[in-house]
Image (tube, helix red, strand yellow):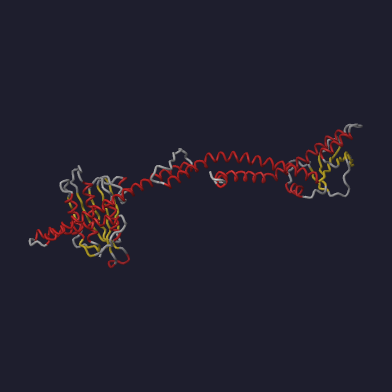
Length: 476
Protein backbone atom coordinates (compact mmCIF):
# COMPACT_ATOMS: atom_id res chain seq x y z
CA UNK A 1 0.00 0.00 0.00
CA UNK A 2 1.37 3.40 -0.96
CA UNK A 3 2.22 5.90 1.76
CA UNK A 4 -0.74 8.10 2.60
CA UNK A 5 -3.13 5.95 0.52
CA UNK A 6 -5.37 5.31 3.53
CA UNK A 7 -6.10 9.00 4.05
CA UNK A 8 -6.68 9.62 0.33
CA UNK A 9 -8.88 6.55 -0.04
CA UNK A 10 -12.52 6.08 0.79
CA UNK A 11 -11.72 4.41 4.13
CA UNK A 12 -9.72 7.36 5.51
CA UNK A 13 -12.21 9.94 4.27
CA UNK A 14 -15.05 7.96 5.80
CA UNK A 15 -13.34 7.80 9.20
CA UNK A 16 -12.44 11.51 9.23
CA UNK A 17 -15.92 12.61 8.12
CA UNK A 18 -17.59 10.39 10.72
CA UNK A 19 -15.51 11.90 13.54
CA UNK A 20 -16.13 15.44 12.27
CA UNK A 21 -19.89 14.90 12.01
CA UNK A 22 -20.12 13.42 15.51
CA UNK A 23 -18.11 16.38 16.85
CA UNK A 24 -20.41 18.78 15.00
CA UNK A 25 -23.44 17.10 16.59
CA UNK A 26 -21.80 17.43 20.01
CA UNK A 27 -21.13 21.14 19.41
CA UNK A 28 -24.76 21.70 18.42
CA UNK A 29 -25.94 19.91 21.55
CA UNK A 30 -23.42 21.68 23.80
CA UNK A 31 -25.29 25.00 24.03
CA UNK A 32 -28.59 23.58 25.41
CA UNK A 33 -26.66 21.18 27.64
CA UNK A 34 -24.64 24.12 29.03
CA UNK A 35 -27.89 25.99 29.75
CA UNK A 36 -29.21 22.94 31.60
CA UNK A 37 -25.95 22.72 33.54
CA UNK A 38 -26.18 26.43 34.52
CA UNK A 39 -29.73 25.95 35.77
CA UNK A 40 -28.69 22.86 37.74
CA UNK A 41 -25.73 24.82 39.13
CA UNK A 42 -28.04 27.54 40.45
CA UNK A 43 -30.59 25.04 41.77
CA UNK A 44 -27.87 23.20 43.69
CA UNK A 45 -26.86 26.49 45.38
CA UNK A 46 -30.48 27.14 46.35
CA UNK A 47 -30.82 23.62 47.78
CA UNK A 48 -27.56 23.97 49.72
CA UNK A 49 -28.66 27.39 51.04
CA UNK A 50 -31.99 25.89 52.15
CA UNK A 51 -30.18 23.24 54.17
CA UNK A 52 -27.76 25.78 55.61
CA UNK A 53 -30.57 28.14 56.60
CA UNK A 54 -32.50 25.34 58.23
CA UNK A 55 -29.41 24.26 60.20
CA UNK A 56 -28.53 27.76 61.38
CA UNK A 57 -31.90 29.49 61.78
CA UNK A 58 -33.98 26.47 62.73
CA UNK A 59 -31.70 25.37 65.59
CA UNK A 60 -31.10 28.17 68.15
CA UNK A 61 -27.58 28.58 69.52
CA UNK A 62 -26.14 26.08 67.02
CA UNK A 63 -22.44 26.13 67.91
CA UNK A 64 -21.13 24.82 64.58
CA UNK A 65 -22.62 27.66 62.54
CA UNK A 66 -19.30 29.42 61.86
CA UNK A 67 -17.61 26.21 60.67
CA UNK A 68 -20.65 25.37 58.56
CA UNK A 69 -20.76 28.86 57.04
CA UNK A 70 -17.10 28.73 56.03
CA UNK A 71 -17.45 25.27 54.54
CA UNK A 72 -20.53 26.34 52.59
CA UNK A 73 -18.82 29.41 51.11
CA UNK A 74 -15.74 27.38 50.12
CA UNK A 75 -17.79 24.71 48.40
CA UNK A 76 -20.33 26.88 46.62
CA UNK A 77 -18.58 30.24 45.99
CA UNK A 78 -21.75 31.93 47.33
CA UNK A 79 -21.21 35.51 48.51
CA UNK A 80 -24.28 35.82 50.72
CA UNK A 81 -27.46 34.02 51.75
CA UNK A 82 -30.51 36.02 52.96
CA UNK A 83 -34.08 35.23 53.80
CA UNK A 84 -37.18 37.41 54.08
CA UNK A 85 -39.33 36.85 57.19
CA UNK A 86 -42.24 38.94 58.41
CA UNK A 87 -41.46 41.62 55.82
CA UNK A 88 -37.85 41.96 56.99
CA UNK A 89 -34.76 40.73 55.12
CA UNK A 90 -32.17 39.18 57.37
CA UNK A 91 -28.68 37.94 56.51
CA UNK A 92 -27.99 34.26 57.05
CA UNK A 93 -24.48 34.22 55.60
CA UNK A 94 -22.22 36.98 54.35
CA UNK A 95 -23.20 40.45 53.16
CA UNK A 96 -24.51 41.44 49.72
CA UNK A 97 -22.02 43.86 48.10
CA UNK A 98 -23.57 47.34 48.12
CA UNK A 99 -23.97 49.15 44.79
CA UNK A 100 -23.15 46.02 42.73
CA UNK A 101 -24.83 45.17 39.45
CA UNK A 102 -27.38 42.43 40.17
CA UNK A 103 -29.30 40.14 37.85
CA UNK A 104 -32.40 38.65 39.46
CA UNK A 105 -33.29 35.02 38.75
CA UNK A 106 -36.41 33.49 40.26
CA UNK A 107 -36.03 29.72 40.63
CA UNK A 108 -39.50 29.36 42.18
CA UNK A 109 -41.26 29.42 38.78
CA UNK A 110 -42.65 25.93 38.06
CA UNK A 111 -41.41 24.27 34.83
CA UNK A 112 -38.78 26.94 34.29
CA UNK A 113 -36.83 26.32 31.04
CA UNK A 114 -33.05 26.77 30.83
CA UNK A 115 -32.08 30.26 29.64
CA UNK A 116 -29.75 29.76 26.63
CA UNK A 117 -29.22 33.50 26.08
CA UNK A 118 -28.19 34.07 29.72
CA UNK A 119 -25.88 31.05 29.52
CA UNK A 120 -24.08 32.43 26.44
CA UNK A 121 -23.84 35.86 28.07
CA UNK A 122 -22.30 34.31 31.21
CA UNK A 123 -19.84 32.18 29.23
CA UNK A 124 -18.60 34.96 26.94
CA UNK A 125 -19.00 37.81 29.49
CA UNK A 126 -16.24 39.33 31.65
CA UNK A 127 -17.60 37.78 34.88
CA UNK A 128 -18.48 41.11 36.53
CA UNK A 129 -21.62 41.58 38.62
CA UNK A 130 -23.71 39.20 40.69
CA UNK A 131 -26.74 36.97 40.40
CA UNK A 132 -29.58 37.38 42.94
CA UNK A 133 -31.16 33.93 42.87
CA UNK A 134 -34.52 33.57 44.60
CA UNK A 135 -35.80 30.26 45.93
CA UNK A 136 -38.29 28.76 48.35
CA UNK A 137 -37.29 29.06 52.05
CA UNK A 138 -36.79 26.03 54.27
CA UNK A 139 -37.42 27.77 57.64
CA UNK A 140 -41.08 27.85 58.69
CA UNK A 141 -42.56 31.36 58.60
CA UNK A 142 -40.06 32.69 56.01
CA UNK A 143 -41.39 34.04 52.73
CA UNK A 144 -38.33 34.04 50.47
CA UNK A 145 -34.74 32.83 50.26
CA UNK A 146 -32.06 34.70 48.27
CA UNK A 147 -28.59 33.58 47.28
CA UNK A 148 -25.97 36.03 45.96
CA UNK A 149 -23.59 34.37 43.48
CA UNK A 150 -20.78 36.15 41.57
CA UNK A 151 -21.02 35.95 37.79
CA UNK A 152 -17.34 35.04 37.80
CA UNK A 153 -18.15 31.82 39.69
CA UNK A 154 -20.82 30.90 37.14
CA UNK A 155 -18.46 31.67 34.25
CA UNK A 156 -15.72 29.54 35.82
CA UNK A 157 -18.13 26.64 36.28
CA UNK A 158 -19.28 26.89 32.65
CA UNK A 159 -15.68 26.99 31.37
CA UNK A 160 -14.77 23.90 33.37
CA UNK A 161 -17.93 22.17 32.18
CA UNK A 162 -17.06 23.06 28.56
CA UNK A 163 -13.57 21.59 28.91
CA UNK A 164 -14.98 18.37 30.31
CA UNK A 165 -17.61 18.12 27.58
CA UNK A 166 -15.08 18.79 24.80
CA UNK A 167 -12.80 16.03 26.04
CA UNK A 168 -15.68 13.63 26.51
CA UNK A 169 -17.16 14.56 23.12
CA UNK A 170 -13.86 13.90 21.42
CA UNK A 171 -13.67 10.44 22.97
CA UNK A 172 -17.29 9.72 22.02
CA UNK A 173 -16.65 10.96 18.48
CA UNK A 174 -13.62 8.71 18.04
CA UNK A 175 -15.36 5.68 19.52
CA UNK A 176 -18.58 6.22 17.53
CA UNK A 177 -16.60 7.04 14.40
CA UNK A 178 -14.63 3.82 14.68
CA UNK A 179 -17.78 1.74 15.14
CA UNK A 180 -19.51 3.38 12.17
CA UNK A 181 -16.33 3.17 10.13
CA UNK A 182 -15.87 -0.55 10.80
CA UNK A 183 -19.51 -1.25 9.96
CA UNK A 184 -19.45 0.78 6.72
CA UNK A 185 -16.05 -0.60 5.77
CA UNK A 186 -17.39 -4.14 5.97
CA UNK A 187 -20.68 -3.33 4.23
CA UNK A 188 -19.50 -0.84 1.57
CA UNK A 189 -15.78 -0.10 1.39
CA UNK A 190 -14.40 -3.65 1.17
CA UNK A 191 -16.91 -4.76 -1.51
CA UNK A 192 -16.17 -1.60 -3.51
CA UNK A 193 -12.42 -2.22 -3.18
CA UNK A 194 -12.85 -5.75 -4.46
CA UNK A 195 -14.93 -4.47 -7.37
CA UNK A 196 -12.35 -1.76 -8.13
CA UNK A 197 -9.47 -4.27 -8.14
CA UNK A 198 -11.49 -6.69 -10.28
CA UNK A 199 -12.36 -3.86 -12.68
CA UNK A 200 -8.67 -2.93 -12.98
CA UNK A 201 -7.65 -6.55 -13.67
CA UNK A 202 -10.40 -6.89 -16.24
CA UNK A 203 -9.46 -3.63 -17.96
CA UNK A 204 -5.80 -4.68 -18.14
CA UNK A 205 -6.64 -7.94 -19.94
CA UNK A 206 -10.35 -8.37 -20.69
CA UNK A 207 -9.88 -11.59 -22.67
CA UNK A 208 -8.20 -13.38 -19.76
CA UNK A 209 -10.36 -14.76 -16.95
CA UNK A 210 -9.28 -11.94 -14.64
CA UNK A 211 -11.33 -9.68 -12.43
CA UNK A 212 -13.30 -12.56 -10.95
CA UNK A 213 -16.12 -11.41 -8.69
CA UNK A 214 -18.39 -13.87 -6.92
CA UNK A 215 -21.99 -12.74 -6.54
CA UNK A 216 -22.67 -12.29 -2.83
CA UNK A 217 -26.45 -12.55 -3.14
CA UNK A 218 -26.98 -9.09 -1.64
CA UNK A 219 -30.16 -7.29 -2.65
CA UNK A 220 -28.91 -3.76 -2.07
CA UNK A 221 -27.00 -1.41 -4.40
CA UNK A 222 -23.71 -3.29 -3.86
CA UNK A 223 -25.37 -6.53 -4.97
CA UNK A 224 -26.80 -4.78 -8.05
CA UNK A 225 -23.33 -3.42 -8.86
CA UNK A 226 -21.80 -6.91 -8.53
CA UNK A 227 -24.39 -8.46 -10.84
CA UNK A 228 -24.07 -5.66 -13.39
CA UNK A 229 -20.27 -6.03 -13.37
CA UNK A 230 -20.52 -9.80 -13.91
CA UNK A 231 -23.01 -9.30 -16.77
CA UNK A 232 -20.83 -6.58 -18.31
CA UNK A 233 -17.77 -8.87 -18.29
CA UNK A 234 -19.73 -11.66 -19.91
CA UNK A 235 -21.07 -9.34 -22.65
CA UNK A 236 -17.69 -7.77 -23.37
CA UNK A 237 -15.89 -11.11 -23.50
CA UNK A 238 -18.57 -12.43 -25.85
CA UNK A 239 -18.11 -9.37 -28.06
CA UNK A 240 -14.32 -9.83 -28.06
CA UNK A 241 -14.68 -13.49 -29.04
CA UNK A 242 -17.03 -12.44 -31.82
CA UNK A 243 -14.47 -9.83 -32.91
CA UNK A 244 -11.78 -12.50 -33.18
CA UNK A 245 -14.10 -14.74 -35.14
CA UNK A 246 -14.96 -11.86 -37.47
CA UNK A 247 -11.27 -11.13 -37.99
CA UNK A 248 -10.63 -14.79 -38.81
CA UNK A 249 -13.67 -14.85 -41.08
CA UNK A 250 -12.50 -11.71 -42.84
CA UNK A 251 -9.11 -13.26 -43.56
CA UNK A 252 -10.73 -16.46 -44.80
CA UNK A 253 -13.18 -14.56 -47.02
CA UNK A 254 -10.33 -12.51 -48.47
CA UNK A 255 -8.52 -15.71 -49.47
CA UNK A 256 -11.71 -17.29 -50.82
CA UNK A 257 -12.57 -14.12 -52.69
CA UNK A 258 -9.19 -14.13 -54.42
CA UNK A 259 -9.59 -17.69 -55.67
CA UNK A 260 -13.31 -17.40 -56.35
CA UNK A 261 -12.90 -14.40 -58.60
CA UNK A 262 -10.46 -16.38 -60.73
CA UNK A 263 -13.05 -19.16 -61.03
CA UNK A 264 -15.83 -16.69 -61.83
CA UNK A 265 -13.67 -15.06 -64.50
CA UNK A 266 -13.51 -18.34 -66.34
CA UNK A 267 -17.25 -18.82 -65.92
CA UNK A 268 -17.82 -15.30 -67.19
CA UNK A 269 -15.97 -16.04 -70.43
CA UNK A 270 -18.16 -19.08 -71.06
CA UNK A 271 -21.35 -17.20 -70.18
CA UNK A 272 -20.39 -14.37 -72.55
CA UNK A 273 -20.12 -16.86 -75.41
CA UNK A 274 -23.47 -18.37 -74.53
CA UNK A 275 -25.02 -14.89 -74.43
CA UNK A 276 -23.99 -14.35 -78.08
CA UNK A 277 -25.20 -17.72 -79.30
CA UNK A 278 -27.42 -17.66 -82.37
CA UNK A 279 -30.11 -19.78 -80.76
CA UNK A 280 -32.55 -17.61 -78.85
CA UNK A 281 -33.13 -20.04 -75.96
CA UNK A 282 -29.43 -20.53 -75.35
CA UNK A 283 -28.81 -16.79 -75.66
CA UNK A 284 -31.42 -16.00 -72.98
CA UNK A 285 -29.91 -18.59 -70.66
CA UNK A 286 -26.48 -17.13 -71.33
CA UNK A 287 -27.61 -13.60 -70.54
CA UNK A 288 -29.10 -14.83 -67.28
CA UNK A 289 -25.88 -16.68 -66.47
CA UNK A 290 -23.90 -13.50 -67.15
CA UNK A 291 -26.02 -11.61 -64.65
CA UNK A 292 -25.64 -14.42 -62.09
CA UNK A 293 -21.84 -14.44 -62.45
CA UNK A 294 -21.69 -10.63 -62.17
CA UNK A 295 -23.73 -10.81 -58.99
CA UNK A 296 -21.41 -13.49 -57.64
CA UNK A 297 -18.41 -11.23 -58.18
CA UNK A 298 -20.20 -8.27 -56.59
CA UNK A 299 -21.30 -10.46 -53.68
CA UNK A 300 -17.71 -11.47 -52.93
CA UNK A 301 -16.69 -7.84 -52.97
CA UNK A 302 -19.67 -6.83 -50.81
CA UNK A 303 -18.79 -9.44 -48.18
CA UNK A 304 -15.36 -7.89 -47.83
CA UNK A 305 -16.64 -4.33 -47.75
CA UNK A 306 -19.23 -5.23 -45.08
CA UNK A 307 -16.47 -5.62 -42.49
CA UNK A 308 -15.58 -1.98 -43.25
CA UNK A 309 -19.25 -0.93 -42.90
CA UNK A 310 -18.96 0.38 -46.46
CA UNK A 311 -21.39 -0.46 -49.26
CA UNK A 312 -21.22 1.05 -52.74
CA UNK A 313 -23.62 3.94 -53.16
CA UNK A 314 -26.82 2.90 -55.01
CA UNK A 315 -27.09 3.76 -58.68
CA UNK A 316 -30.84 4.24 -59.05
CA UNK A 317 -32.68 3.61 -62.28
CA UNK A 318 -36.22 2.72 -63.22
CA UNK A 319 -36.96 -0.95 -62.53
CA UNK A 320 -40.08 -2.97 -63.32
CA UNK A 321 -40.59 -4.41 -59.86
CA UNK A 322 -42.65 -7.49 -60.79
CA UNK A 323 -39.98 -8.72 -63.24
CA UNK A 324 -37.09 -8.28 -60.78
CA UNK A 325 -39.01 -9.99 -57.98
CA UNK A 326 -39.80 -12.92 -60.27
CA UNK A 327 -36.14 -13.33 -61.16
CA UNK A 328 -34.98 -13.14 -57.51
CA UNK A 329 -37.69 -15.60 -56.41
CA UNK A 330 -36.88 -17.98 -59.26
CA UNK A 331 -33.22 -18.10 -58.27
CA UNK A 332 -34.08 -18.61 -54.57
CA UNK A 333 -36.57 -21.40 -55.33
CA UNK A 334 -34.25 -23.04 -57.86
CA UNK A 335 -31.43 -23.05 -55.27
CA UNK A 336 -33.71 -25.10 -52.99
CA UNK A 337 -34.71 -27.53 -55.76
CA UNK A 338 -35.13 -31.09 -54.54
CA UNK A 339 -35.82 -30.06 -50.97
CA UNK A 340 -39.24 -28.49 -51.28
CA UNK A 341 -41.83 -27.39 -53.81
CA UNK A 342 -42.80 -23.75 -53.23
CA UNK A 343 -45.80 -22.07 -54.81
CA UNK A 344 -44.79 -18.61 -56.08
CA UNK A 345 -47.49 -15.93 -56.14
CA UNK A 346 -46.57 -12.52 -57.59
CA UNK A 347 -49.34 -10.00 -56.87
CA UNK A 348 -47.24 -6.98 -57.86
CA UNK A 349 -48.70 -5.02 -60.79
CA UNK A 350 -46.64 -5.49 -63.94
CA UNK A 351 -46.48 -1.76 -64.59
CA UNK A 352 -45.30 -0.79 -61.07
CA UNK A 353 -41.77 0.65 -61.08
CA UNK A 354 -39.28 1.72 -58.44
CA UNK A 355 -36.27 4.03 -58.61
CA UNK A 356 -33.50 1.84 -57.23
CA UNK A 357 -30.23 0.08 -57.97
CA UNK A 358 -31.12 -3.18 -59.80
CA UNK A 359 -28.35 -5.34 -58.35
CA UNK A 360 -28.81 -4.13 -54.80
CA UNK A 361 -32.58 -4.51 -55.05
CA UNK A 362 -32.11 -8.06 -56.33
CA UNK A 363 -29.90 -8.83 -53.33
CA UNK A 364 -32.48 -7.45 -50.91
CA UNK A 365 -35.27 -9.69 -52.14
CA UNK A 366 -33.13 -12.71 -52.96
CA UNK A 367 -32.01 -12.80 -49.31
CA UNK A 368 -35.62 -12.51 -48.11
CA UNK A 369 -36.85 -15.20 -50.54
CA UNK A 370 -34.06 -17.64 -49.63
CA UNK A 371 -34.82 -17.18 -45.92
CA UNK A 372 -38.53 -17.78 -46.55
CA UNK A 373 -37.89 -20.91 -48.65
CA UNK A 374 -35.56 -22.34 -46.00
CA UNK A 375 -38.11 -21.59 -43.25
CA UNK A 376 -40.83 -23.47 -45.14
CA UNK A 377 -38.57 -26.44 -45.98
CA UNK A 378 -40.02 -29.72 -44.73
CA UNK A 379 -43.29 -28.26 -43.49
CA UNK A 380 -45.83 -30.93 -42.52
CA UNK A 381 -49.19 -29.33 -43.13
CA UNK A 382 -52.16 -29.70 -45.43
CA UNK A 383 -51.35 -26.62 -47.50
CA UNK A 384 -48.21 -26.49 -49.64
CA UNK A 385 -45.45 -23.92 -48.92
CA UNK A 386 -46.39 -20.60 -50.49
CA UNK A 387 -44.26 -17.51 -51.09
CA UNK A 388 -46.22 -14.42 -52.06
CA UNK A 389 -45.40 -10.75 -52.69
CA UNK A 390 -47.60 -7.71 -53.07
CA UNK A 391 -46.87 -3.99 -53.33
CA UNK A 392 -48.63 -0.68 -53.05
CA UNK A 393 -47.56 2.98 -53.32
CA UNK A 394 -47.80 5.32 -50.32
CA UNK A 395 -47.57 9.12 -50.46
CA UNK A 396 -44.59 10.55 -48.58
CA UNK A 397 -46.30 13.92 -48.19
CA UNK A 398 -50.08 13.58 -47.88
CA UNK A 399 -50.55 17.34 -48.46
CA UNK A 400 -48.82 17.08 -51.82
CA UNK A 401 -51.68 14.98 -53.24
CA UNK A 402 -51.16 12.97 -56.45
CA UNK A 403 -48.12 15.06 -57.32
CA UNK A 404 -46.30 14.10 -54.12
CA UNK A 405 -43.32 11.75 -53.94
CA UNK A 406 -44.31 8.12 -53.46
CA UNK A 407 -42.75 5.21 -51.61
CA UNK A 408 -43.44 1.64 -52.61
CA UNK A 409 -44.09 -0.86 -49.83
CA UNK A 410 -43.40 -4.43 -50.90
CA UNK A 411 -44.52 -7.22 -48.58
CA UNK A 412 -42.87 -10.65 -48.64
CA UNK A 413 -45.29 -13.21 -47.18
CA UNK A 414 -44.67 -16.88 -46.40
CA UNK A 415 -46.68 -19.52 -44.56
CA UNK A 416 -43.71 -20.86 -42.62
CA UNK A 417 -43.61 -21.62 -38.89
CA UNK A 418 -42.76 -18.06 -37.86
CA UNK A 419 -39.81 -16.66 -35.90
CA UNK A 420 -38.99 -17.49 -32.28
CA UNK A 421 -38.60 -14.77 -29.66
CA UNK A 422 -34.81 -15.24 -29.63
CA UNK A 423 -34.66 -14.98 -33.42
CA UNK A 424 -36.68 -11.75 -33.34
CA UNK A 425 -34.31 -10.21 -30.75
CA UNK A 426 -31.25 -10.82 -32.99
CA UNK A 427 -32.99 -10.48 -36.33
CA UNK A 428 -30.81 -7.74 -37.81
CA UNK A 429 -27.57 -8.45 -35.90
CA UNK A 430 -24.78 -9.81 -38.12
CA UNK A 431 -23.08 -13.13 -37.29
CA UNK A 432 -25.53 -13.91 -34.49
CA UNK A 433 -26.74 -17.02 -36.28
CA UNK A 434 -30.27 -18.22 -36.94
CA UNK A 435 -32.38 -21.21 -36.00
CA UNK A 436 -31.42 -22.73 -39.40
CA UNK A 437 -27.67 -22.37 -38.79
CA UNK A 438 -27.05 -19.32 -40.99
CA UNK A 439 -24.66 -16.46 -40.34
CA UNK A 440 -27.32 -13.81 -39.94
CA UNK A 441 -25.71 -11.61 -42.63
CA UNK A 442 -28.54 -11.73 -45.17
CA UNK A 443 -31.13 -9.65 -43.34
CA UNK A 444 -28.47 -7.24 -42.03
CA UNK A 445 -27.14 -6.54 -45.51
CA UNK A 446 -30.66 -6.29 -46.95
CA UNK A 447 -31.73 -3.68 -44.43
CA UNK A 448 -28.55 -1.65 -44.99
CA UNK A 449 -29.16 -1.71 -48.75
CA UNK A 450 -32.81 -0.66 -48.29
CA UNK A 451 -31.83 2.20 -46.00
CA UNK A 452 -29.13 3.31 -48.43
CA UNK A 453 -31.97 3.88 -50.91
CA UNK A 454 -33.82 6.01 -48.37
CA UNK A 455 -36.17 3.14 -47.53
CA UNK A 456 -36.22 0.46 -44.86
CA UNK A 457 -36.70 -3.24 -44.11
CA UNK A 458 -38.74 -4.32 -41.11
CA UNK A 459 -40.52 -7.32 -39.68
CA UNK A 460 -44.23 -6.62 -40.01
CA UNK A 461 -45.63 -9.73 -38.29
CA UNK A 462 -44.76 -13.33 -37.43
CA UNK A 463 -46.74 -16.24 -36.01
CA UNK A 464 -47.32 -19.94 -36.52
CA UNK A 465 -49.33 -19.02 -39.62
CA UNK A 466 -46.35 -17.36 -41.31
CA UNK A 467 -44.10 -14.31 -41.47
CA UNK A 468 -44.41 -10.97 -43.26
CA UNK A 469 -41.46 -8.67 -44.05
CA UNK A 470 -42.04 -5.17 -45.43
CA UNK A 471 -39.53 -3.45 -47.75
CA UNK A 472 -39.85 0.26 -48.47
CA UNK A 473 -38.23 1.58 -51.68
CA UNK A 474 -38.57 4.95 -53.43
CA UNK A 475 -41.08 5.05 -56.26
CA UNK A 476 -41.12 7.25 -59.34
